[in-house]
Length: 83
Image 1 (cartoon, rainbow, N blue to C red):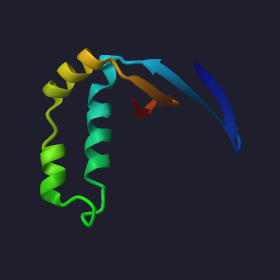
Image 2 (tube, rainbow, N blue to C red):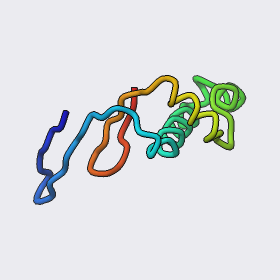
Image 3 (tube, rainbow, N blue to C red):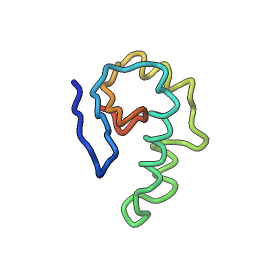
């Protein structure tokens, strides 16, 4: 699915696409940064690390994503989200 729009004079395109391993690093980095951005009043640093260790394990994510085949949201040419 493609959705097009403009923001000011800049055109942008949002696409919902099936998983591609070309995005594994971006998906992993997005998940990691999201988990580690949670306020430590909600989840402690130890809990965040248990949920999503640092450094990110890209090989584990490649296997995981190959199995789960998530849908991706691409904004322009960058990953904006996945499910």
